[in-house]
Image (tube, rainbow, N blue to C red; front, side, top):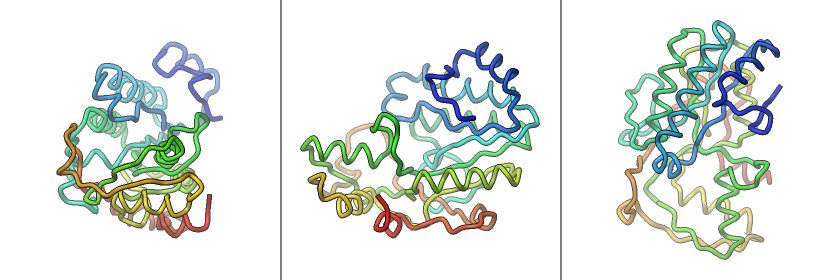
Length: 248
């Protein structure tokens, strides 16, 4: 059964172990994380607790049960784009560093699976977790967004990600696989597509470039080659703009 933080605090290792021994799960899908990069930069100790230590603990508890860990395209430095699973990682942020460390912990067991994904479009209980929710909330508050034309990802609906994870888990896939949208889009193109679909939010956006950005390093192109996962799935990973035009 799915668990959220209200049910179980994953950094309470004793409570997690007790719950694990009580429920005796057949498999584990681990998608919890401290996932907002600015938060991780401000508090790297907490980021490593949540993203690395928690993952190590869950993977150890799982043992030889199927264990699926959700990672990120941001493990790459973005210089290449269209990354394959075996391409060298090069994290540029604390968040990305912790996901790389967590991947290493998971892969100590050759039967476990790391799935790297990209931006997920979805609807969270708090209404502010999905990238789409963040953009829509900003527009509804009257803010203008400046989005990079030279930073690329493969956005994917969260519902599609979930379907893919269940299929891969049922197959007892292992190693590393990439699961993301089939369309490589800039941040600007993603925002423009969302704006076209949600005129009621009063979208305001301007194009920008990474040259104008003064913060922590950002990876320019972390697009993923998902051919290996696609060969295993019973459905096509969708192009984000085509999916968005017929959903929401």
